[in-house]
Length: 318
Length: 320
Image (cartoon, rainbow over all chains, first blue to last red; front, top):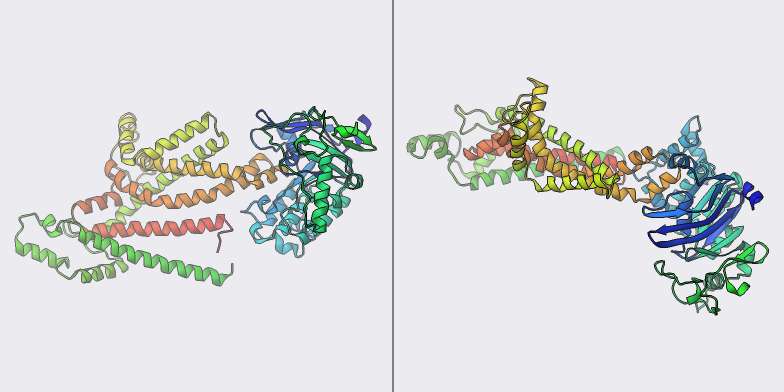
């Protein structure tokens, strides 16, 4: 893993996030190659967003993160103090948020935001021209006009483009996109997904794309990681996971997505509720909802490797 | 956005301002008429000769119908003539009384406002950033104390503990800022502090709550995720947006500031509008009280206008 680790854009081992005695993320590993897109799928509360916020050290007050290894392009980030880590935010790792409307300073114009980011990118020359070019690159027509607008005067789709333009200006090694299209309507969603693909080719950044939507994950991802109750339960190449899901939870997610897409009268829902973080079941967290549960599932499950580049946290694949 | 809309807004505001002033003038005038006591008897004594009383009433138009009295008064006020004082010997014009007293009150009021803003900015910011720690507990306790202390009581406490021990702060009297700025700042300090402390408490609590609210906004996390420095994020994102509710509350508190001035000027013997109004009320000096009340009303309306304009500048979502 050492040789691979040197070339990896991002390497994370055994991330744990806790709030007091409550374990919210329970040992997550992530590996990203430069230019690769990893789709992270899971329900709300599965720990997707917390995993990403802890990569940026921006967890909410009271939460604490620990990881055995966190490397960005081979550089260990574990020992960095806040001042040194801050310089990595935006340029090393950047994040695109779910709600573009809430992501902008409501008291300032778009131009002010672009100018602040351009100052970080250590660019010189007329900032207006560079800002307009950056907006133009993400498909915003009449960028000079948009620069003079306040955030409340623009649509969610336009703001998400502007935020992507800000992040793109910093040319980060890793971009984390946390459900960036969930609050947008369908047509805008398609445009933003296309924008992500072209952006990634231009910058050759690695992309972590968080979503609860299987269909979206399939469109953008090279690899998929499925999260459940603070753990990754399955990873593998996107095609393989989608067409031959291994974990019963992944199988349920895909069945639900298929049923939604085909407009089936009977929705193939996964029965039951995700477990409470306050009292997670011992062993496999999916056991109470799983049709294939059997003796042995009540013990903690390790990740198995049943096929090439695939991993699954399930007893069925011993 | 365009100039015409702006002008229309300005015209509408000016009309509302004028209407409020007239309504206020009516209320002040009839409140004074309804108050007990006869100005003629107060000025000339209970046992004054009836012909002298009648002459006094005639001289000050008190024998006219109330509506005619109001018309005379408001007509004069519109031209800056508030009539003659009923009590001061020789009948001093009220307008000249106000012209000498208003600058003193404006100085004390502005002094108190500056103190309240300075105190609250420090206490509110420290409390919010040190939330739950010792500094927050001290700041919040100060705020509760400040809200619960009446300003007149605080005035006496300050005289008792500070003025009597530190002669640089006189317990009584006032040096005009035109005579000596240093003297004015020193002699005005305790009265200004007595007025400022309760206001500072309210401002500090407002700022603390606003800062904590903004600190949890997503745009602050986004700003940090872009690698902006802590000072940049604090001033341009957190403080900048917390100032909007802060300035709104500031504007609302100006009327309490004026109420405080009236009381505190009496306690510290400051020859401002407050003492003038209180003396006028005791002497049944209608023209003086009416003119003072109308001036205070005008100050409140103008500051509200100013605060509205400031808020619109601070918050583009509110701009017309």
